[in-house]
Image (cartoon, rainbow, N blue to C red):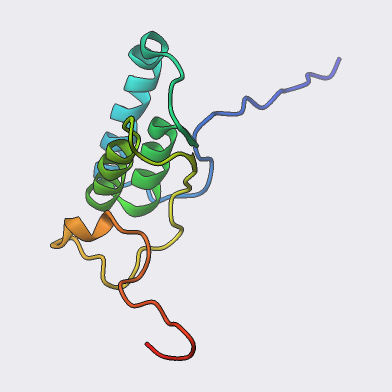
Amino acid sequence: MSEIRVKHRSRNWGGAWHRTPGRILGTGLVRAYQLSLSPLVGSTCRHLPTCSEYAYEAIARHGLWPGGWLSLFRVARCGPFGTHGIDNVPPDLLPRQHWWTPWRYWRRTPAKVERHGRT
């Protein structure tokens, strides 16, 4: 008899990422939250993916420091007067987003927007 294996799909991001100590710690804390407190809170997130899924992916893709800031600002946007809808983790950080300027993780668009061929 052949054995059939069913691959269990996780609700978290399944892409490849560097397994550094900071990323493992950060994703481990998010996963602990998902397994312990998230069922008690319920699914009340206004965004897709949920805030914990966003935090897991942001930390896995960008590291503990930038991913942590992206996650913190995402939770801040999730308040009663905040945004809603699809809000994916950016695949790459903008060139102006450095580890020493965490406030720049709040805005996800470039500061200069090109309009009508002018900057």
